[in-house]
Amino acid sequence: MTSKNSSSDKPVGVIGVGSFGTVIANMLAEKNKVIVYARKKEVVDEINKQHTAEGRPLSKNIQATNDPEYICERCEVLFPVISSSGFREVMRNFSPFLHPYHILIHGTKGLVLYLPEGKSIADVKQIRRSQICTMSEVILNETVVVRVGCMAGPNLAKELSEKQPAATVIASKYNEVILEGQRLLRSDKFQVYGNSDIIGVELSGVLKNIIAIAAGALAGMGLGENAKGLLISRGMVEIVYLGNALGGSVKSFIGLAGIGDMVATCNSTHSRNYTVGYRLAQGQSLEQILTEMDEVAEGINTIRLIKTFLEGTGMRAPITENLYKVLYEDLKIEEALQYLMKYPFNVDVDFL
Image 1 (cartoon, one colour):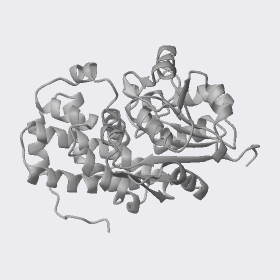
Image 2: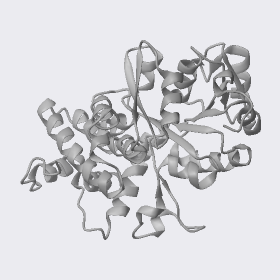
Image 3: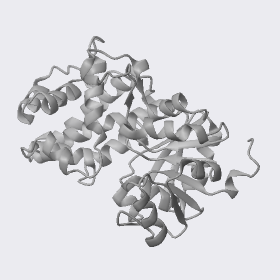
Image 4: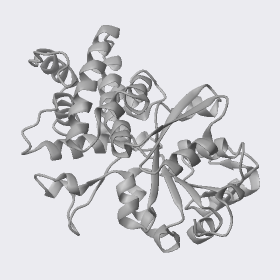
């Protein structure tokens, strides 16, 4: 530690005040002073004057700022909780004020694609693993911070805000990051596990969003629990294959951040990804759904990115590939399901 004070004396920072960021800030505020960063001045004023963020209640232990330097100077531990589409830009804005003594534990379940200047995913036929970054890799690429962690698990914001029992995983290569995350977040209602496989835990949270969209579609078509059981078990196999190819370990995918999170989001109308699938099955267009959603459903971007990654690898991921066709090539949900029912899965599980 190069800082003067122990991190336990300092406020904890939260970057982003969407539904999940607000919940994390309130949980941290039970034991600590918290500073939250919001980009819009009107949101900062609302938090500081009314103790709400866009109508969501916030603890009086929470102060807001729109100044990256202010929050970085006062907080050693920061929780970035922003959508993956804005993550890289925010880290670049924060980079001048971050130091090696900072600890960053993100709560974002998404991927960022690094492409040459001026190129978009529509311009490329194939992408390599080195171009796909998890949020911890974005932090390492864009800042001098070394001690990076992530938070993942069945953590639906609405249930956490109602103080319902839940658990999460703090993953990091550094044990001190895991211990700090546990110290700050653990409570009678919230268990915090540790895992050293940060890439596997991040990928678990990312890839399960694909299966959650498919689960919502099944529900939207009025199909039953047998079909959902089939989808979740086949989805788990697909996640393990994709996750291994992207550098994660099987143990993370069958843990709380993988199967635990998937069960929660594949059964919840509070899940944005589940809602996208449900509304697609009701005949709504992707454009219409995205226009009406307040926050991003990360699974949509993930499907497109993973489909492009698969090109040329020889790997098959039938659920992801068929959802891509539904989202971007006008394949009807019913036809995608028919295809999956006929797909020749000869063996149930062959990765253990």
